[in-house]
Image 1 (tube, chains in turn cyan, orange):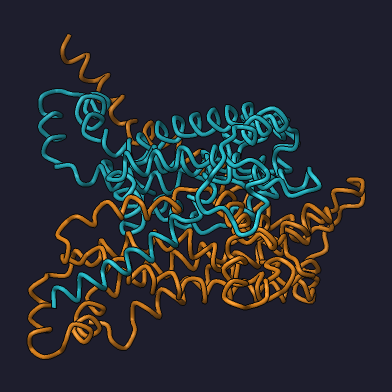
Image 2 (cartoon, rainbow over the protein chains, first blue to last red):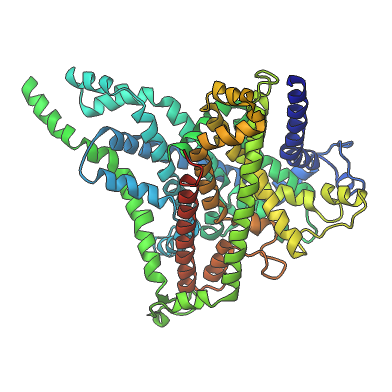
Length: 275
Length: 302
């Protein structure tokens, strides 16, 4: 029985590994192959020759360095602002009972269902008036907005898990509401901040459709948009360069999945199950 | 001194709920609630970006009528829903198998490392996933077509023919979203007491029988949740379509999101685009609620 289960489990693990990891493996290896090894039949399953030329090409021709920094700035700023706003908001909604509280909680849940595309059209017109079209600040504003419903939800969950007595005893000791938040709630919610930051950062790092519509010049592009336009700008499909740019874009995802797996799993599970 | 401080403190404390929640509430009001209603207003205007402002006027529900009589839009509705149902069915089934495999104690805890490997696609940008799959789908030098021709079949034009194009879009979505289903279902399986399913297995139900009779009903709510979250996301599919086919061949793989986007921005028709996006929102709400209610209150619920 156990022996048979072992066989089935190993066979399935093998298949899943092939399916989920081969595309990543293929991208990494294609990115370091010279052109001759990419355009070749049968395909070179193991890379036999090594070159940096795809990376050199991508960085010199397509401003990928600049684009990478844009992405890093937008995703970091989005994360910082979202976490500050929702760490406060989540605390407010979960600690205080005030009039209209439930209305707001339901509103944040319902707005999660609005497809981004519905909001893009008004954003486009509003940003045109406000001079925010084709700016990184504009993108940060919409990314923060897009991240808030999920983030506030996560934070409300984290705060509600804290024992209420701690807050009460601090109040009796003469602590103000702000003191209770700063000295008691905030230190306790740090793991929650890590979880939320990872999800918000990845969300902003990976976003495509909003940046497609709200930015148009090369120096304002973010990574996903730059990668998607690699093909259109050149006649031959630049396979090696797509692979190199794809690898650059994959770095944070791969690093985060391998190092902070615990937080990612908690984030995705909490974000779904508590919702 | 002390009383003075405490009255000021008390007054400040009374404002605390507002101070903490105001930033969140303001952002949601200004950038979600307001644009939502603005979009409803826009959907009733004749509003083209290419025409002067003077040409804008109120036309009631004409844009809705136009979208609902528009073959591209109707076709996109059909394909988007077909896509969502097939993709989500495959993802949830495959995700369940993966969760069962990772939950198996055949190798003790040594399979835990696979969990961090399998979540990698989940962390990638959809557009990047689609791009790296386009390397695999490459017609002449791609490894997938190489394997297909090595097996003696004809090479497939993955973006040139309707059915392969649709399969490629579904496959990329399955690759990207199955790990999410796996994570939630794995968390669900952990809530099932081991003794319960083992007892049923010994009682002659068999392992498969106990899975369907005990485990599935017990985690029914988790399954409903995964399906409704995934359906909601799948109905929004945009990035991978843009990257893989951009709607081709013809308009056969255009989804609700790509059609609405093209109406508003490529054809610069803000009014019709807004009407399309409102219809799109209504379809998402209705369909995901139906999926959720149906799965939660199914015949086998306990």
